[in-house]
Image (cartoon, rainbow, N blue to C red; front, top):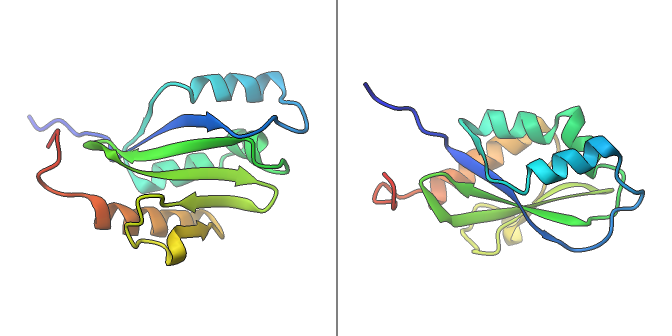
Length: 132
């Protein structure tokens, strides 16, 4: 039997400010949950979460205050940052893989997030990854 593994992970990386307006109890709960590593089976699953009412309540309409790290499940050294703000959702590739122009991309919509995550994954995934 072949065990299916998640494709991507996401975790709260660091705080870069204070949330304004103050977080609701539900937003606090989600932020606490995201302090632990969360796994996603597909890019579609992750994009759906990023555009869910729960996640947008936490990030949309606020100045950027938290950075999330998205990584490959099979190689946690391959990561990009995800930052939500008043301007939208931003993907930042500090490792400069070449997946995004100037290593940054402001996500247009859920399909755009899927497309960019798939491109990034394709560029950084190596079959000789640590856990493959």
